[in-house]
Image (cartoon, rainbow, N blue to C red):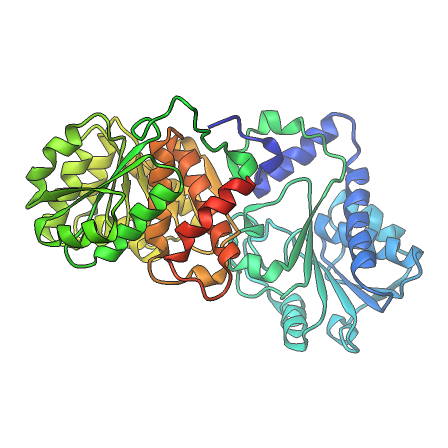
Length: 487
């Protein structure tokens, strides 16, 4: 994987606070940062809406301070603005900007929301860790109930910036303005659905402060990884040879995965399948090799062939003792392995057996669980998706692709990438098998496991968007050539 771009860093609440402090140590006054932040909110409002009444909801902390700045800047531009204050300002810069606001301050915030004003939510920022209550809760509920246009400062109040979880309630916003770098909540559901259009504003913090902060979470885009480039020297094995271990009943799943691996650039595909189903694979996949087996022990010759780089096992595999034996046999090989679907679910009664096998390997493992498979292996996430994926990667010594509309790829040492480009019509049978095949195909071409998983996830979402509504899983591999050409 090439050097991770700090431009793509996603900062925790603590890391963002460290960035603010580091900027101050370089001589940038924190008051100037607040002025720039509030000014960015005011600029967004003026770009997006025609002049109309505005109510700014200001909390007691720095988030509220940004709100006072936004109110002042809008009023200076001729907008009718009122401020509803929730408690006296307690932060130093917020106190200064509250005093600079010379306009109307309303005691009854709920009454101020009557008449369909544009609302700026500057009540609580990303560090909130308790449910809203009292007047802030009533206002949040009123914003959503009345469908008021709302702009969030940093995150919608009630959202945890690190996890994307809603702590009780949060407003539905049309737009969110955050600063310097995004936070996990801007990409993780359910918070992402409440943020609306997200603007990351430059408020003057030097990018150099990130060197010491050393963030380990990134937004997954093509700038995060580099796809392999074939050479005239290549042949089918050097391009990457993938083995897909398939089952006898749900043959379509393995074939979808194999097709995706080939379309994304793998030079050769070999299906290792039960003899009773081998003819189905052979007829459906004329460009692939077929190896017939009658049990896990029969896989030894193909697993020992050094020309094959990666084994994908799970799609359509089936469950039970035979499936578990096949997975453990594959993990006992020296190949890189992608575990998906049944390869994960067949260990739900003995997850430690699988995790022990992955931990002791010297070769890479990538796991691609959806939420149900993840819970069966690692337990129900209780700390947010990002933290759960990181913990799973540490427990398994694998790269874990925690799938969903906000897929998290987690690797060694807390390294993580969050994808947010998956369209909802990817929620269709077989699309996960395609993703597993894409990751295997990239891994076979020499990408490191974290990069292969991140690229596969992004390309999967982009292919889904290119296909549009009405897609079926079979469409995704066929969308890859044009997509890869565009990159």
